[in-house]
Length: 331
Image (cartoon, rainbow, N blue to C red; front, top):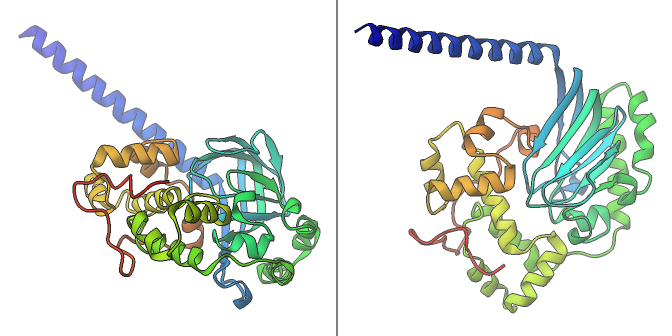
């Protein structure tokens, strides 16, 4: 009986210690959140940028020290025009350009996460390009910037030179106008438009939440699988299968914290919960529970919008039940 009492007391002490540690961690997070200030202003792109730019955001952030973040993979390409402190890209799970600091930069589409940091604060205008907007806005196909972080002047000459004018501007509206004017002029100069079937294929992948059968979509184009894969990868930067994987990851993780993980897996066409977990670790670098708890910012949360919702594209079926949806077709 004495032993039972001792075990009970130890268990109570352990529970009390764990509760205190949890309260301490929560208090520390609250203090950090209170000390950190983020001002975010959203802007609808000019009509000339429709379909090329998903949205524009002005951000001013202040923090009492170094802020480290992990950015999951996504389908939008951030073009960041900074007029504040530089951002350091510490690591890229899938790509080149890590190990250096940038003021203004572009992050191309990829299938991996990025680790970044800044010290004290950041002030910038963030332009989120669509995969099909790369050629029109940047003047180069998506494959030339895919899996890369590059200085902004390397893709839009003169864009980084706007820093002083952005800093001097009195309002975000003035800053947005300066950046948009530069981008609209760039679009007017850019040559080349992706084939219509590439745009249609991308829209179908996105409309299906990444669940459409790639083989069926390819058949609809009338071209061979090899030709479709080659041209799509050149324009977007990923193969149709790779693009579908990122689209599905974005759609599924938007439901984290709102639905049970098993339900999310079924809703988004994963074979099972383990399959979803493997994909989340692949694209975000951490399992679903950790990603949900971290509430990591993404381009879609910055824009205040949800990514593609699940559902078959028009005329295109999803993966049949029981078949691993992670293999929607050849890459």
